[in-house]
View 1 (cartoon, helix red, strand yellow):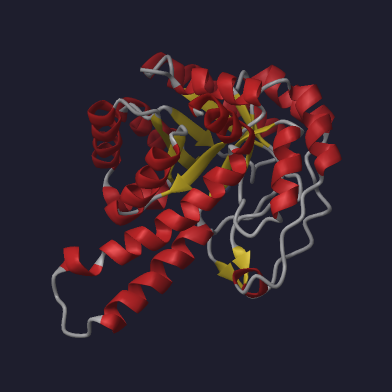
View 2 (cartoon, helix red, strand yellow):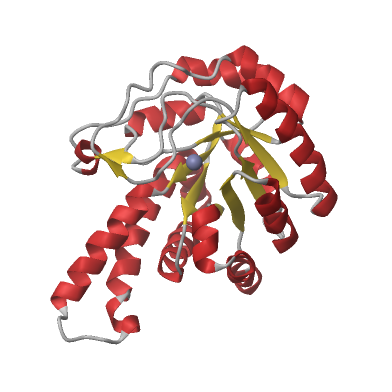
Length: 298
Ligand SMILES: [Zn+2]
């Protein structure tokens, strides 16, 4: 079975990005896997500390592993935004493929020192687990916000990126390049889009020379996604768009069947709606590889 490290190398070679989708229940997990399976592209399932608390750390690890084994499919599990060593080590022991060890709220030097210690500790528990570090401010909640702050300032600098990667030994870097967690109400309506600083992504890539993750992808302009991937983004996180689809489709399904109490009769349209969102994002992120796949199939 392919390791996440190999899938990332392949993504880099093909100029595509691996989609990362957060889950907090089995409805979301089924939808994410169904979309990836249909498109035949690798996928990363993410679970933050809150999402892991909802599903159970070992339980989500067992579910994802069961899919990977049964279908021999490159589905990976990431411990998203982990703020403490204890919870990072718990994820390492549970066999997560990667972790976002996020001390970005701390001053830079402290972030460097503590991330470096975590890399050593986590690899001693689970040697093949990839550790992602984060610098810069990309907000916190994957929720709907009234308005979004201006993210064109306070971007990660190439020099910080180079120094952080060199000193901490992280495998993957999450920079601040205009991205932000959550969506504004106008983004949910599709009236406005997040815009990324493509030149900065390219400069950070050159300086850091490791795979880069774009967090807070929900609501980003499609063309900016394409250019960001071409400039060196290898993983794109989508969460809020799935949560919006989850809620809206659940409300619609309940409204369509007001007397239904059987969960497995209520959830199929919800899985289908979330799957459509995931599939459209995976198609965008993997565009060049999917075109090649189509050609080789002919
Ligand atoms: Zn994130």
